Image (tube, rainbow, N blue to C red; front, side, top):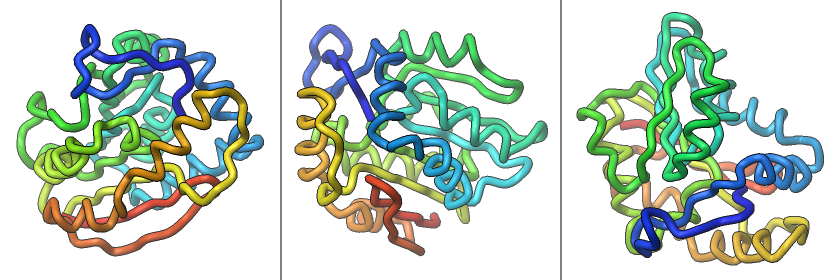
Length: 211
């Protein structure tokens, strides 16, 4: 969940929004999940199927909370790359990075820094609703491109029907933004993935797919 937001790249609207006050974001996220964030995110790691030795990309990683959990699953023989539009969040992630983790500044709809089929697993959690609506299919196509054949995708975002705490105006805006995100399975299928599972977690809905 994102807290205090600003436009990315000097106000370019098509880039979406970035989070620079990431410490506040972490607090807001924890409160919104009612103390369940750790459990929910560990479940996301399980659902992603990340295994020792996997190369993983986390799109919209923020300051790297999920990256660190994924790194534990990928083990010393694997690697996890976090990507986020916020240079401040990426810098924080690098400072707290574990062995086998790396962080890059970038947006979901342009993963040109990575070659085709680079990753065994691609994840994205609470990031898609920040991608401009007209760019969301591009984001899925890019995630598909960098997933290896047989590789896995897990995308999770707000369930618009869930009751998120009204902690501040930003939370209300994000709930409304989530309601505009089309069905995740449709976006994944249109990109070329084969959807294998749809489900829900506290506050979230998710799609699991295979290239």
